[in-house]
Length: 159
Image (cartoon, rainbow, N blue to C red):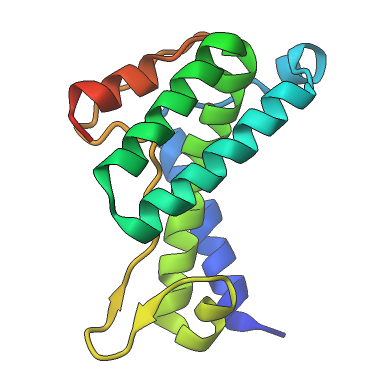
């Protein structure tokens, strides 16, 4: 049995328990999504384009690449507001939990963490994991309905 990975998964679930106990409001409505969420080719294509822009932004650390990512997200949020809202809520909740899961795994076993793509520099003992571009970095809560307030918040903060 892989106790390192199991422990990291438990940390992931512990964060969900903490989010719930702390009154987190960004939970996606999974029941409503069963009825309302539509898998549309244009939305999926736009989402893939965002992923490519995010990868470029993270690998190049270029402000213009991040600006392109924000523009793509704003366009998708405007065109597919309910799907975007659902996806951003999933990313908010699961992204945070995945972050702590991988950080825990990196603390337990750097080789296993590397299998999941966690960059780790043994020299500095620095575990650098991607950040969620939907997170409100100043702690403000995001909107609870369909919309794109999360992108606007990022722009206001000059992220």
